Length: 89
Image (cartoon, rainbow, N blue to C red; front, top):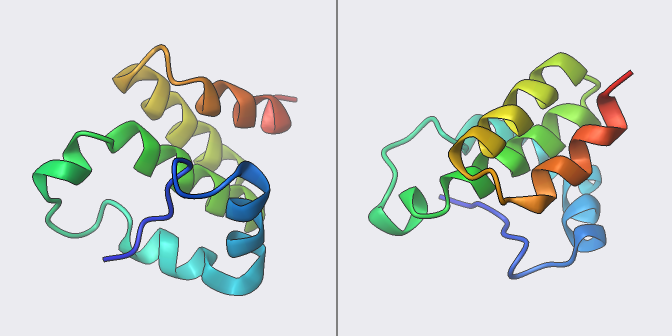
């Protein structure tokens, strides 16, 4: 299962992966399979990454829902706040 992580990539690297066509893989795979213990420990990151992919697909409402879930799981997860500002209009 592939989940890009912000610890492995910068924001621009993750954006490049998403715009490079990986966004469908991210949405299809993220949160739809049984997660490992390690993945459960970073669930907010998975929701955030799926939100990025949904935003690239112009599913802004879905992106905001995923960012909000990431914030709910970890109110200190700055990345979700960062991306939420792009679709809050």
